Image (cartoon, rainbow, N blue to C red; front, top):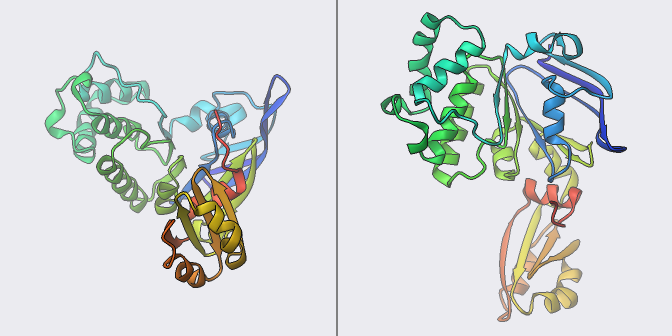
Length: 303
């Protein structure tokens, strides 16, 4: 059983492939991450899946509906948290939920019963009659998440849900998303925060130039694509140290800005050598999803 099946999905603009033959599936109850640098095709993929953009080829089955012919029916069981909050500033917190629920044709009586539960979930019960302009960024994001749940969806699309939030607000959103998964909801998450993907996602796909270049659990991708230990070396002497010593003791070294990243199966020799160096500082850590992401998609800035 799948909640979403995408096969050979394609979309191009002005002769450039934005989505170039994607294949992936979501099973009920999982959080699936869609990662990639700017311009990788993530947002276009979401629009195609929701039936908001017409594909050039491929098939999409969303909650047992063929999106090409029954997108509206599929969307009735989907919730969407967009990149940017699009709450109505003329309405209160409660009114935003009420009006959005009416878009789904929900009776007012049902909405009046559902809204208190969603306000409690978002931690906004005492703000129910507050105008949107007075809410903090974290409150607005929690309200946007609660609004996406108004129709009790089976599948929730989250497009960079914690961008711009402080660490406390981000952790609170993560906890709310874990609660949804415990209730059996399925999540499709796009994010630029690798820690977020590593914490929340059961599986994830890394996209670049419209293609999936790696797919698996966070741990599987780390084991498959990167050495297990990383030493980050900083300071004026980092480049000279890397040329004379780092490349000899590590499997691989990469320089980015003022930092040299040394990747090794066993970094004890690197750390022991650096402990005697006065011209550099260093950080010894385990490899993580960000290391995989940068190795596969590159370190150059994308606009």
